[in-house]
Figure: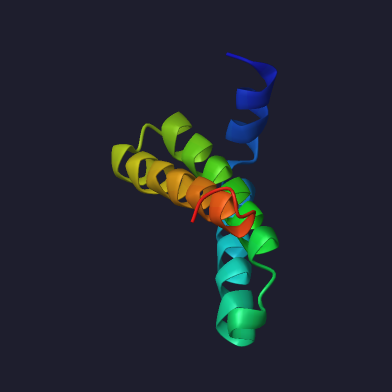
Length: 88
């Protein structure tokens, strides 16, 4: 097992909480700021937290949360592409 996986397993609860706080923060910004939100920043933060939470779920062998957060990675990538005007 890689050193990174061992690190994640050692600090799993803390990393999961960090990912959840990141997700809450990114969607709170959109809720508060609406159309004035820094969408690229929000989608980048959302995608990073989805990667973190997916990794944690995979290491825990939690299929449901692996799928859910894997889906959020895809949503985040589309959000990044849209915020960067790469797709419309």
